[in-house]
Length: 347
Image 1 (cartoon, rainbow, N blue to C red):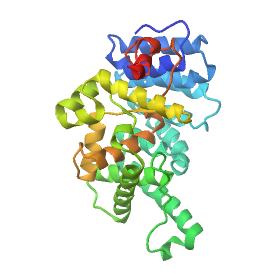
Image 2 (cartoon, rainbow, N blue to C red):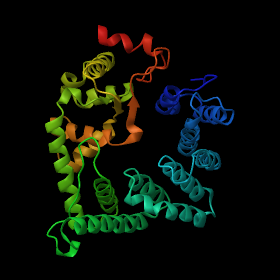
Image 3 (cartoon, rainbow, N blue to C red):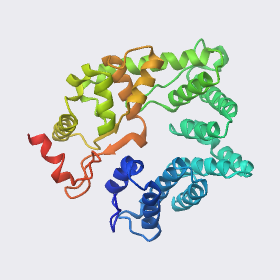
Image 4 (cartoon, helix red, strand yellow):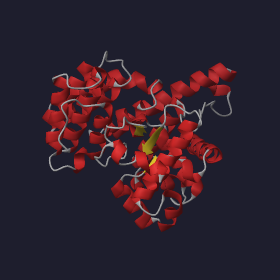
């Protein structure tokens, strides 16, 4: 879609969902970056996010020089390199440096500077290890994640009951189902990296499995299947029902019904006094992978509840609701909210 004169948060969210499906994704990336450069963002604080989006698109389309340029602009646009939002952009910069050739030392220096974030930011284990993996350095990712897990578990065990070496099992604050703690994400990412490296299951892998089981159970206790607020974009929705027809009863017989159910539930939650509402973008591949880790069926309610809890804990998956009436609809259709999903809760 052509970008507007002034880009809103809703516009950026829509472009994030739809840019790769356009005829010219790189053109979209250039337009978004230009809007940030020219101060055509409704909220100037969105500049870093706009450049990051442009960098992601360029990287996916195998344009490392453009990805590096946009990523460097993104890092510069954030208030400081320690800004929580800047970490992902810095990891993108490292990936682009790896791809540029001959700049591996610079890339590793950037990722090494990000390493302390593994202990404090839930998203850091995923984006740091993904950058290392893209450069063929999964073994380094496993080492970093293992050392971070040891540090976090030792600190928590010491605080709870003395040195970790005397504890029967590490003390882990799982956190609420919709916001698991840092330790959970560290353990899960380490578990995935080790599985991809075909390393033998160890005690911390067992702990990762147990915590995931707890999260699934607690999510199932907290949510019913029809209010998980998972949003399936049109292509994902069609694939979901093609592979799991029984989920028609949960998510609706067609995409219009699916969006209508979500809009109605969001209105209900708002009227009940809840704030900060949104939906969470889901994919069939993500659900299938989660079910595979659990050894369950993607159509099973407990598995879906666990997947919903996992997705809703990722800031990047959240789509804020409601948009302004004249802004792009949250569903990514390209229509204004007032012309698309807003009326669905009334039908």
